[in-house]
Length: 246
Image (cartoon, rainbow, N blue to C red; front, side, top):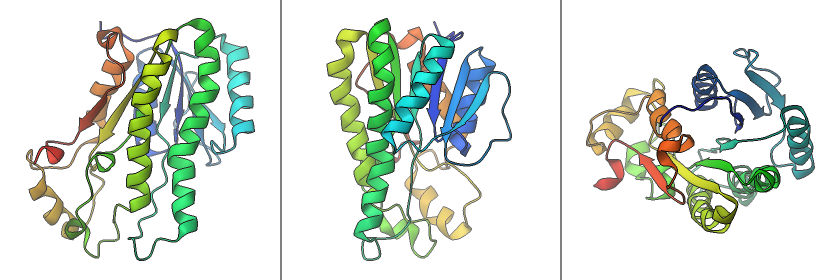
């Protein structure tokens, strides 16, 4: 039930830490992954991981690239909306332009990719969309955790991820008739050698007493992609070590 292979998928934000982790794991399972990102290149590509430079906020560009992929592969089985912009200003410092830019990448661009990919999924009457949300799309960030660390989780990020989670539910209902499942995964903070000042305030808030390893997102990801979750749609799986349960 947890086998997942011979599929064609798109991962946005594919050149980042999570995108790389997702792509490598899914490629090892025998899938072909197309990465969308705006960097010039990736250093972990192979015959099953292909990089395409795409501005996902540009709908014309996204539709064009997906059409090219479909002509090559004949299908697109899944989309993982992973790209995100996180400007770490607090409310007092956040400009309206930066807020708009965050919403444009984190929410609007995800919608563009969904609109583009479902064109093919509707034809095949099959598809799987996973949106990467955040626990801060569910609860507010505690400013006392962040202090002067420069790692603030901003209002724009919270608003965009909250919107993406609810969009997940809405689209799950409306795309079910095409046999397209739509779910979200909302992670907590991923360990990345953050400074001790931050760790000392964050860790006590987590019942499991540590930050998440990026590999711990692979279980929920594979579960939602595989037939083991064939009757699950419209859900938001929170992977946070118990943070939001307090």
